[in-house]
Image (cartoon, rainbow, N blue to C red):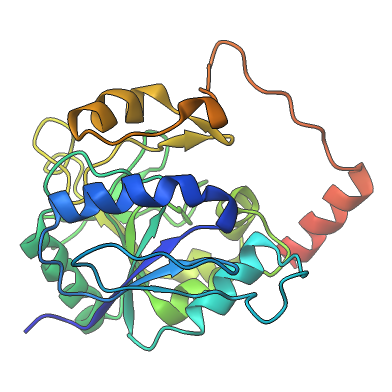
Length: 265
């Protein structure tokens, strides 16, 4: 029996241009997906044929508010009534078939073993990892710098909620959330990288990620979109060029210090 599962696509209204490409590829590589999909938005709605998409619209009744990234995610999680979620973001553009049976098996493991998380795609530097009794799963080291990762993963809904502090950005959640005592003690696992990789195939295959610092990642989207006849105005965002990184204005040091104190206490 398949474990009840909600697919959470974490997004924001300003990334609306990613939604149609994302769900076009999702429907192509996971046809007849039986699970409800919750697209996290502030006020906007979106629908796609044959997919059961609902939009969280977490700020629909307060359109002039400016909730933080984490506040948006918290409000979205409060709308979910399943024990397990598949966490995705709107720029995780599928480029191959989802291993549906394997994903469902891992969801059952989370439910039965009370694991907090099973990460489905590991990036270099996300370890170290340790072998387990399960041949397809590794345990993420408790001192891993990126113990909390926002790449595609199966999560216990309550465990993810407990990781989040309302003031944090995605980067802060991954870096500082990984240092908090609660996350250090959570049972966090990932796929066996010797079995699931670019050569052998990934459970949920995509290039991390389609958008980098607000700009399109050409390696992730140009050829993929062309193959599927997905038309996008790339000029609206422009392309990320690793050789010419975008400079971002730093927040005042007092604000950054206060954020760190709130995150680590």
